[in-house]
Image: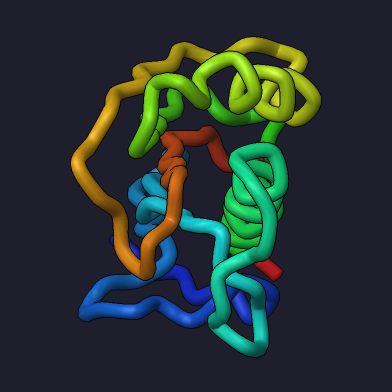
Length: 128
């Protein structure tokens, strides 16, 4: 197993890596809508936060040797299921191949985020 750190994603806010690569599979840590460089939470509602979390996820996958098209499963966490429809609108823009997915409501997320997304993906190229 190799750990992955993505220079284009926000720094991890705890004792974990952005992703772990095991064989031909990549397992990402959950990505919340933090802005790379500042670590501040993205402004706006669930649409803007979902977009930033997915941009962060894309950066992690890129650093690990994959991309959104090679994601086989996501797990999504929302603090309010009332955001489900708006979340789905943005999510569908990023995942046109429709990987398997679980989406659950949670009481709270780090930094007050409204969404967190993690993924399992296949490697599609060498890291870098």
